[in-house]
Image (tube, rainbow, N blue to C red; front, side, top):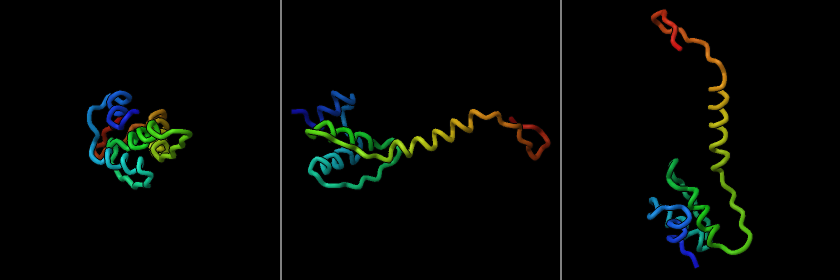
Length: 96
């Protein structure tokens, strides 16, 4: 039977967990409902993915990660695709 550590290494290629990941995963595996507030890049996705790989049967993971990343990306793409007009600076020069 795989463990959290073997899945971390074999599936994701990481040797160690980031801070709080192990604790969050252990709580999920114990069927508790942890609230984990982690910074961008803190490893929230693994806290969802590793337990799913360990539980038997059908699993549904509902995560705000996609919605949180999609909206800023869509805005960035939309803003970068438009031609931008030069902006006037206080010196009378045009700035691109």
